[in-house]
Structures are given as structure tokens and as C-alpha cells.
Image (cartoon, rainbow, N blue to C red; front, side):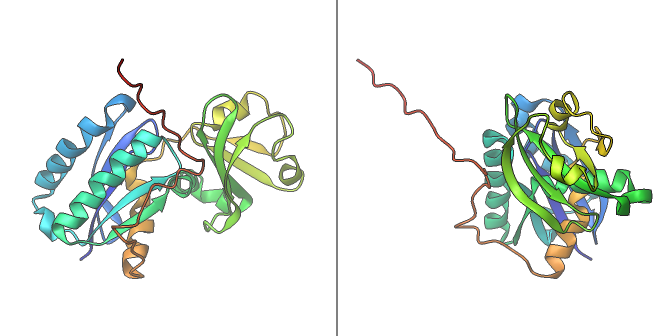
Length: 229
């Protein structure tokens, strides 16, 4: 029996899930983006209590590593790494764009073979973090930051239907009229990573706690505090 605690704080919604052998058994969601940090630890305690297990019984912890909100990524990864260190459990990282694609694939499972999937995370103004996957999550285009305009994805849309999903897709829907551009507003959750996390556990695809960092995709710049005069 494989028990995995799954954490996602990468975007507007935060969620956690406890899965057994790749199937979600308990989950909690917060829609308050400003309070991911205060949501996470009490939610973990609640879900573990609800399942009637101890943290020591977990087999691994999985967390979305990015791209996404700089603050959200740090909150989720720091919590996951701290738990893994204290409990001596392996850490599994999940690409946020893949997670969003999984949610869209599951929503459209009857006709998934007809589409490619373009998950998008809003990166402010007309920029998004995006990638393209097929229905088996094979990477067609690697994650990148793109500034959207009316010609974005045109070469692919000329030959293939693309299902756009995620928070950034709303911006593209407002300017894209191509007949092969499809849109879904499905909201991903930590429970959507259950199969990905279980497969990673089975393959022993773990990351090094000491060197694991958020996948920001773009360079992170911080402004140094002003000196007091």
C-alpha cells in the first residue's frame, strides 16, 4: 500500500491530497491565494487525522515545483522538504503545467486522442507560462514563457486541435478565434497528481532534498531592502 501526501500551492488555488496506490482518498482546497502558507500546515494535520494515519506512515511526499507563483512555489516546496527531512521520506516533484494538462485530459477523457493540450499559467500582462502535451503527457513543446498575441500557436492550430487550459488561457481566449482552438476552465487540484506521483514512487524517481529548487522558468529577482538613514 503506497500512501502519498500531495501538495499544490503553485497557482491561485492551494490544495492537498492524500492518495493510496494512485487513487485520491482525501483532499482539501483553499481559494485564498494570499493565505497559502496559513492553509497548508493545518490542512495537512486535518487530512492525516481524517485518514486515521500517522505522518510516519507516508511513503512519499509529492509537490508541484513550478512554474507558478514565486511565493506559492516556495511555500509548497519548503513544507514538503521539511516534512521529508523530518520523516526521512522521499520527495517527488511534479511540473505544474503537466498537472494542469492532466486535469484537462481527465475532463475530456472520451475524446482525448483528438487533442493536444496547452496548459497556461498567468504570468501577468499578456505573458503566460505554457507547454504542449499530447494525451499521454508526452512533451510536444517544452515549458516556456510566451507573450500572447493573435498569431500565437498558429502553426500548430493550422493542423491540430489544441485544448487550452489553466489560468492563462482566459487571456488567449479573448484574442484567439481559430476554429481549432478549444478552451476549458477546469481547475486542477492536488488530487490530479495522484497517478503521476504513484508512477514516480514506483520508478523511485525522487529528487535530492538539499539541491531541489523551484522551477521558476523565469529568473527570480528580489529587490534588496533600503538602508535606513
